[in-house]
Length: 492
Image (cartoon, one colour):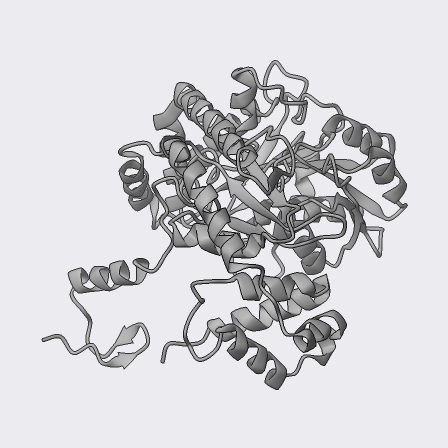
């Protein structure tokens, strides 16, 4: 028998490989399913047989290749350049277009791409002591993270509660002398609508500013949907004034995580993105992205995925996704008490309820209990709480099952009734400031919500979401940070 006594992941004696893999499989048994078309967030499943095995094999081939030095590992440089070229061509750049000099970098994910877009814009204006960026309220939270990390001011433009898009005049009014970047989404993650990119880019260009289009979520899907006849509005480098675009390959390009591409219209725009340092006795450091050492595994896996699927494969997957979106939207329309937040125009179905007897957070729990994993979105400004479905090609075969499951879950949620928090807890959520949270208060709240004592995440989250929904945004942030901190404890 192998002696595995030790601390955490480090046993006193090494374990056989088969036993280690069995442990990992046992841990994975508690996870949401990453395949099968029942998880509407976090993962992107094309449902293509053999693709996982190809990507894993490609990953293994380059797992130990280091992206720190392209002169040592030219294979990785070649694959990165190929991925950038594919993304640029798909998004209106490259030879024969109005943006022939597009350049780009492969990053570890959408957040890194957005951080670097903000960094490049900030560093291009070194004379500004208090740079700022203008973003729609529906822009991804990673822009707020970039602003926080990079000490850049964040000016948020509200979105219309009906169209879910920012008003272009309001975007123009938000621009200040300190503004370095204006942002548009194609589409926004929460609701799946494409911002008025042409108009926003025109406003930015008139002010002499960069305009970044965050197409991390849907940038690899929109061009294929357009080829299939969908009325996709202009959003890429074909739009004058668009200076950079981000697109995640680990979303609708169906590559394993994490691979994103950040494109700039020309090399001069990208130049401030780089970090170089030579004032030390070691090697001269130069990095186009945040990380220095990078595994070649994800890049090789993305390269293999694109090569294997090809344009014809992505068109087929986009058609399946389009049909799945239409079917899910029909299911929502057919279910009493629910309404679509917007008519689907990309790969998102988002719905809400105006029925006081139907608690959306309870509905999400009821869907989860039936094997359908959706994403609740809390109330924000004039926007009601909603349920978000990210739709992938793997959903298409399951669409017929979703309608009856949704109707059943709605009936169960109505029977259960809305979550009712104690009046004193509601009052506390409405009046407490983040600074007033004490460890004792957090521990008491967590215990009451089932988040304490090492029990992990509760099966039902409606009570937690109801409390967060009742709290102002700043308090929500602090509560979530404290709750996640309680969950993330060392395994001694």
